[in-house]
Image (cartoon, rainbow, N blue to C red; front, side):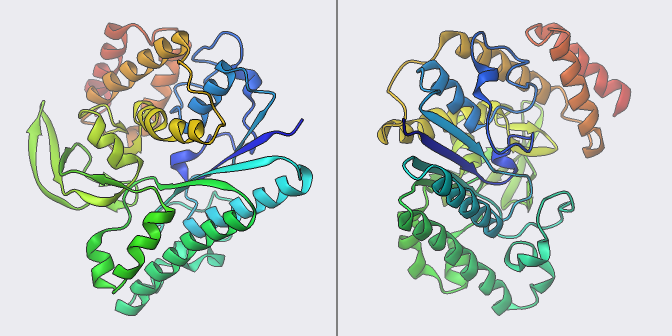
Length: 351
């Protein structure tokens, strides 16, 4: 029987975290638990999809490939996607392939990139920050990334791959298209990439994953310093969740601008799941009630953790991660008072 192969490509915004190319859905079958979800690791789009596949009894029909890795640039993402598609076509010539492609920053600036499985020198348009010396060199980065997006789409078309392409967060801005005389490329890109027009908003994060974001001014909301961010036309997961979720329920930590589990859930449920339904991969069926209850507990835990660690420094990240694992291992995640006190004590003891 032919199968559907679903590829999830991207950077850390889509990274499963275990460096395995295949998601083992057997682990998630039967009674679901925090342990089986590998929680408190953030639940990302492919895992919500896997739970729907299990709930709809489609595991014999669908195989999930997780090839996203932290710090991958967009040209790397394309190369890894090509390799995976060609491998599947070689070994399963009669199967159908779908690709969920999350694009990353145009340049991976200021990151620790020594732990990824590529030679960054082979990807100067992803990692060549030192080459940005004048107007023409910066424009060249934009031109090459736009061409790369077009190449991804063309490769998918040539190989019969149905794809969904979107950004993890906004990396393109109208000012850039104007500045570098690339306005003529906008309509072409909009036919390829699913962009989200987003509103002016108050945002609790001073920085995104790839540096400071455009901000206008700051103000206190619920005792939290927030920044007014201008709206735009070329948003991704971050902007979509910011428009659909309240302050404190969007990001992992005040020092970590990756989306939290709730952000991924909203984006998956409203955007990606509907795409799978439209393409006859999933049925338009109700979610598993047991899963929903578990998700709500996770979203609540992440909100409590975020709001009670607002004074932390970047160096405390691992400590908070360790405490989160301790809370889950002691079956205390659903004890709001315990979780609150645990992180409040962290503030008093370590900050």
